[in-house]
Image: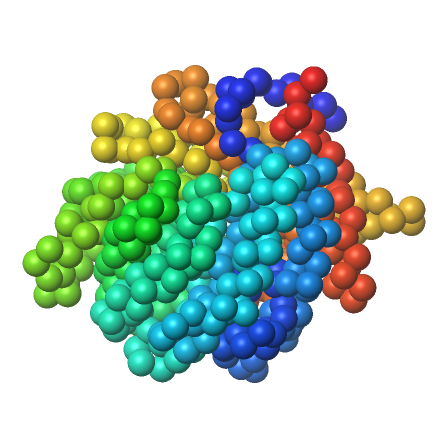
Length: 442
Ligand code: BGC
Ligand code: BGC
């Protein structure tokens, strides 16, 4: 099937994204300390296939091969994350230069191939020693994070083209600290709110630390999921507003200077004088990660939550059982523009992608027409938003490689490139060639 595609602006940033624990492996190399994900993955019953990220895609040793794949794809940017426990094995103290050396080599390899390095400072792999001191429930972790940001900027600040402080603080709060399905595995429900405030404070302090080193532009990558109401009553609408405040506004409102939304019922005692100004430090780009909308209706009487999440029927589904709704991305981009107006910085879509059960055929080729359709639909949605006046300046596919998908272990494949985990053999899928043809237009 062919997908007629619109033409994007000539300076549009085309990229792919990954994260450290999902691809690097080499868990004990060069002085790396343990993170909460090492602890969680090694705890029985936490990961569906019992796997860990100990080896993952062995990217730590194969990064040159992976950068060659990026170069072959023609992308102008690569979003990766830096493992805090490689830089500070216990989350404090001077930099472990051997750990930073890896990112130094990676950044130079990228630049040598004409690919802009886009570095995320925190993609969920908190040093275990900080978790033992309370993790993101402890306000001090925000200060630690800014010190770590300073150490990284001192080493890489001259070459990184875009800094992303945090990846998806909402998912880290909700799945990691609210529901216990991600590390560190806490089940605090709404008592997880300090994790929101302390991550945001850490973000704001890190923005200052980066700018003090002359390291910019700076962004944050949030996960967004537009609400689709599954009912038309006032109670359904109130439930939708409550979910929207939690998922889409809790982090973005304070980042853009509006303070916390009222709906989620945040304990104001957490927020000290001056915190909201730190959090609202201007950013240059808003990173938007989008996978799917969320269906919401009013909760049953007696439910601990002010909404109920319901499946969205009538859409194709990925191997994760997530509905494929490209229009949700357009709606979300328009909603951000309408909600924040002039306070909204330019947007880059820092993650968009899908999992399918991709299997090599007898000739070793991997055809993934569903992923091509997915990406085509979402790129058209971005183009529609641009045509409607939203400033969107880039799009990153999640992900370059099939990788270790958190609680799902190796069972979900998101890559443009297939990875055989037994041999670490990389095989570009048909979506890799398709995406290259979007990036390099004749
Ligand atoms: C959400 C995705 C999110 C993922 C995190 C899902 O439930 O729909 O948007 O990225 O959880 O693993
Ligand atoms: C995360 C990625 C993850 C992807 C798919 C996002 O929530 O940032 O690390 O692999 O969604 O679940």
